[in-house]
Amino acid sequence: MKELSKEKIFEYSSKELLGVMRFDFYDGGLANKWNPRDLIIELNDKKEIDLKKLQQELNYIQFDLIKSFDTVVRFCNGRGYDNETLVYIDLEVAKYVIKLVPVRDSYSY
Image: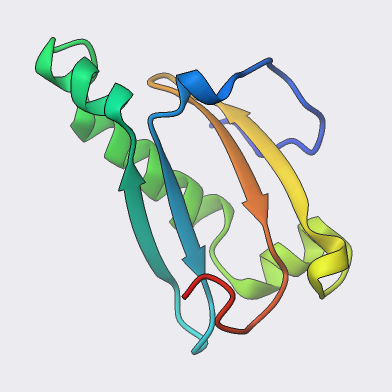
């Protein structure tokens, strides 16, 4: 399978967003929340997206590529908000831009 890249490997605009997945390790475990955008609902209504495959890709990113807080820290070359890092991956269903925040606090709540 493909790996995450720190290099921007594709162009994108906010109009192409399917949604925003937020996840963190505040209490030591992985917590996540999906915030869908209108585009994903439109594509699903038109049967132009396979949500099951999309979920498989999201699971691959979360549980295989970014499986621990230590992995986030390694990608970001350290801890703290100053080390936030964007990573990219182009998979079958979608292209993903992932903002890694190497902080264990309640930043997303």
